[in-house]
Length: 368
Image (cartoon, rainbow, N blue to C red; front, top):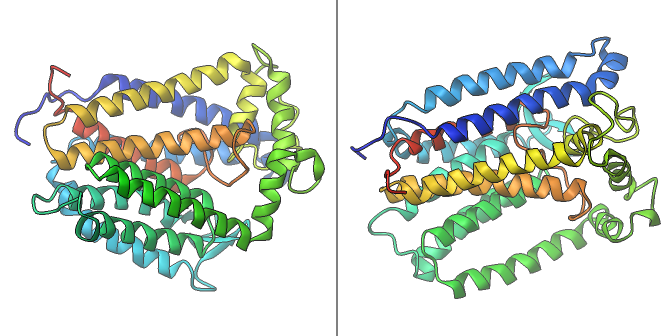
């Protein structure tokens, strides 16, 4: 692309900085008590979150100024590297086991989660493949199926960890990309039914997933087991009311609600800042998605359009699942809330993705 506006989307920048600020604040509030009792430092998690936020913002602004052709160039090597890392992480003694999933590579507290990077690598590679002038997305065997096979291979490796939450985001994002590339509805419908059957099989294959589905419909059937997370989350959200209990005043974060600074940080936010605080965060995500769609529609290049659509879909799907889980709309699954939950890999990767989105926003036609 030769023509550009030179000015990134200011609305996206403001939304991201607000979400990051709220995230660091809530990570500190949600984790201070636990961090003090375990590490003797109430700022243990907050300092790390601030460090990764600073690194992510630096990368975001650096990537924002690159030539978009670089994203096309590195799409294939990036995908190959991520597949290699997904294989390495499964090796016992190499991959780090946390919460029953072998999803991490690294040493101690500083580690990476390859499945997080696979999401962005898959977006850029599928966008490159679908934007190829000779690629025929409307043909099943030569168009629709290759993309599906790539998604299935990555999903399969992620499920071997296992990590259903990240796998679901990956597949959802991939389907949005296939749809945006112009796939036929009958092919997408076929995959939808296939995916529902596969999801049912995954649930039936693991007893703990069946327990989570049962707990989703009636958490009080097993209040100290499968229903515990949801019950404690609702105990946090309910008392928040309109204005909340006040920043730092959460009761559920005191060893009642598991993972209050990671998967369930939105519950603590709703408890302390109330409906207004929760609504403000949701509005910021809606604004971010709106501007992302604007970029996807406004850039003149198909590759860049698909990359913008994929990044926007990734953030939207992950935020929707996390908020749905903590509020009882979806069964419990381990997935972080973008920009707010504690986690170095997820936060850094998401900010890198936003950097690409901001980069592409410089080329949006002014009529959009």
